[in-house]
Image (cartoon, rainbow, N blue to C red; front, side):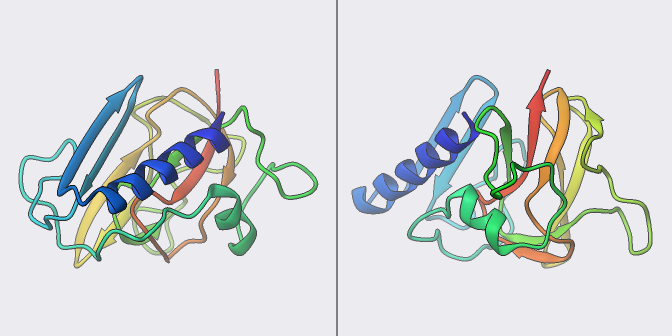
Amino acid sequence: MAGQLARDIEILADLFNAGGWSEIRLESKGLSVLLSTDRTTPSLGSAGPAAPTAPLPATIPAAASVVEESPVSSEALPNGAINPDWSVVLAPNLGTFYRSPKPGAAPFVEVGQRVEPNTEICLIEVMKLFTSVTAGMAGTVRHIAVADAELVEGGQALLYIERD
């Protein structure tokens, strides 16, 4: 399911780029996606304009390629594949991924930890603006797809959760 979701988002991004649209918003079953060419468009759930970001990538990388390239924590399958039943948490925007609230502090979450929809799982920082990312679902963290302090793209897989 998570692999299919990542593929669906990749297809949506390709259609957005090819269609010449300036903005598209999609909300369905707890998932919200915003694609915009206007850097001042408020991000989903924010009150003000979004922080400036890099242009939308031509395609959003598939979750499996992110997993293979990053030194990460995982309960992934032996061949490095992600269980298709796990749900993915995506980066809301471009920025630096931080697993803990400050240097030297314990990470927000670890593999094997149970989370609730409002559990804070990481911070994404861009130009000194920190965005708190929550799990958005109840379940158990099964794979962290990004290393601490790594630059992430908007829409990139951050971690995978096995839903309850």
